[in-house]
Length: 357
Ligand SMILES: Cc1ncc(COP(=O)(O)O)c(C=O)c1O
Image (cartoon, rainbow, N blue to C red):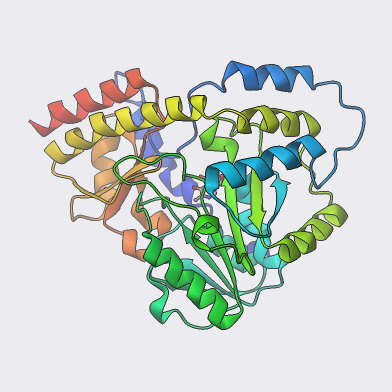
């Protein structure tokens, strides 16, 4: 199994990290996209208060968490019809294991995409097929991923694009999973949940959400699966047997995090401010910004090999990710994460602008 997995892509970036670390002003790491803004204090407080936890947690989640996830799906995502909810240990593990749990044989993944969709297909010994966003000509398969806003491109799918994926699912009786972990971070475009567009028929449809970015809780490992009750019952049974339980202090912290949208708005404003500063600096340096309408990243190109762009930025002490990590179509793009402090982003803007002169 291990031998069929690709080399861990971040290892290839390490030498550029070394170059960036050698910059007199220090490294500004805009590669991995790990949140740097503190977890809001009210969430930390709930976590601390829950630290006495002698019993096993329940895979399905506490009644309070189940109610919080349900209300959030109804009120925030606009889910309608019959649906169920399930907490998961961060969405990366779900993405990596879902095709295995569902015994999928053929998995459609976006052409430029988060690499773990492919890893999940490999773990399941399934065939992975890359497809464009428009589903009109998608081949038959038993499972498909969509991701809006997209990592890495920041592209937001239109309702029509999501509807065409739903039509594909209905026509083929296939599972469609929408990874919506950046949905709260709209900027010049705002994405919509698959569950708001399904018109109350959630058969074969699942949406994945994560508190990692929404609430700066990546270290907690708390995410949510919402959708088709039959599928979720099946997945919950598997996870019960496999010991895939979200720790109770994390479940309690998730309840309070889901009860508040103010901190999410504040975080969205932080990321969008950083995009507004960094985007024009990259443009001045000759980069063309593509999509980047939402989410956590700027996706851009100088029409050169991605590693050349990565090397240029590394000399300025800035570490970005080559687009090739996300598929062949990203070979001349880079992904620049907005996950650095405001101070570091201002510093990065100055370094890029000075070098662009
Ligand atoms: C598209 C996408 N899905 C899922 C994840 C996994 O996030 P987490 O495991 O923190 O919920 C990420 C993380 O970067 C992502 O970009």
